[in-house]
Image (cartoon, rainbow, N blue to C red; front, side):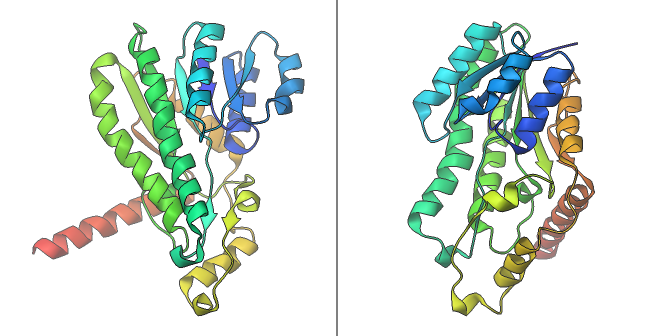
Length: 267
């Protein structure tokens, strides 16, 4: 059964592959990005299925305009994927205040505003709707040097934990997708702070070198996109969806460590 999808961040990475796979299987997609001309060729290939709109997560008006345009073009939004985001790396004192604000504004506040705009649309649909937030294994665990990135991912997961309870009576379902390291352009688009000498012999610099070497083994982006598509088929989709061997293992290990810490503290 085909659906009407709304997807942010479709210029590259998971969002781009997700959009292409959905179109190939007959779904309608309202794809949003900042440079809409990037999808002109794809629009010509799928003129009846693909709708394209401008969206910038730091521009609240553009978020509401995109959601309204999607509803006008497709009549309903069955599944919305909040995928657009930003990655920032560096110890917190290496990051300037502008970069700190941008990380939170895009990943956390932008995602919150998008979900806020989607809820009244889905609430008025008899069948409700499904919102998939692309988070990361970094929404459950933490690496050195990614403190602001983790703040945004842990923050959006907490927001959804609460909001999902608010809107459950309206048949609005949520899934938090938590992929591990994936073969996208995340590394090349990462905003990396200039290193301070004091961090040369710390875990932050060790991870900086690892990033320079390409993050090691990466999951296939097509497999990650397909896992997101598959979860939308279910009437009761999973609330959390770790994707890939690394993410599944790391999330389980991270949760176990937190549980062990709680048990140790109360003994």
